Length: 435
Image (cartoon, rainbow, N blue to C red; front, side, top):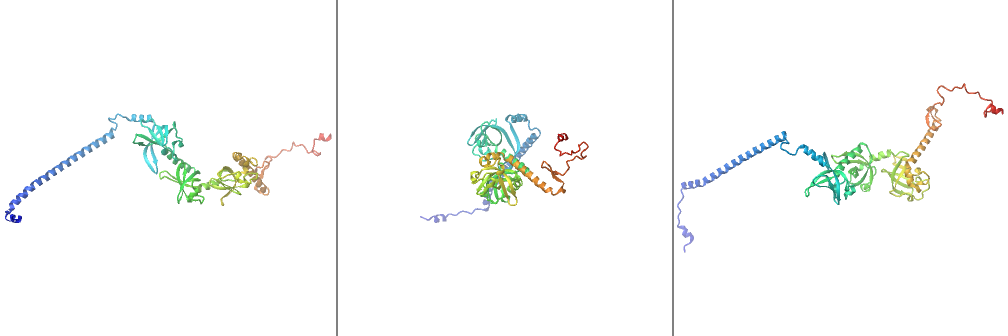
């Protein structure tokens, strides 16, 4: 059997001429050029169609804009009067501007009055006379942290103004808030207190290397260590109340800066001798009790507790007790304040037997004490002025210090009607003497 190569070796193929190659190439190129022409034509048609659609949309938008500008209510069955009537029916009150978290939003919010008709563990159901129900979550019930709405006084039957802050997509119910309203009121209150230069109390709830965080009017404010009068650390001040004054109140930046040092300076300026202040017992020592009076530590010496002898202070006072004391002295340079309850006792020993009576009559007893001090000072000044007649002052028979003037009238006395003096010893009339 001959091999395959040998079989094909005898086959001779005639060569192709150049003319035949040209014809075949032309045959294959004609369909390709035709296809390209079809694609080009279709693209042009689509482009023209898109251009027409864009022109139509532009014309529709321009027509709609012109209609809204010239006749916005044309063809609308719900008129503007119907809209106002609906607002009146549901007692809605629209206002501009609110604040959520650290961001100030200039948006239109909706306030609505409603009545609480049921509460649960997570909030309260509110009737706002609308088609859909409304719910007040517990976290939106108060500016303070609470676990149940009842802690904020929210009970069935309570009618209040709420803010609509959202919608529950699950059941289309409205979500209400009281916290956002209280938040705005708290900032307004802080601005007012700053304008009045008032002293407020703030509870320390946290701290860092720069200072402590204190809650004032439900808002968290920062007190730098440079503005704290004592050298206490943040841990030592935690959960304590500090007297504070406002330094910076900026609602837009959520910045509230407070000062304990300024409040202390003002408090010390008001500690006049004889004034009555309320304080709390901080600690007991064998020689007396230290009393916190608005952030200032004063000493109530054992000898100034009562007129009766006190052998054991703990039988009269305990740490944490609140009491009224009178300021005996105040050394501002050394920061020392001496206090007394002894001067406030209506009768000696009342501080031991009936301290409640002492505190009830504290202001009255202090007023009497100040009057005695004033009289004593006036008498002392009068004694000094007796040796200084050139001062022109004298003490009247009533104990009042005043100008040194004569008691005689300006025109003098008429002595013409005064009977002559009798030769007798003057103990009786002439008739009595003759008898």
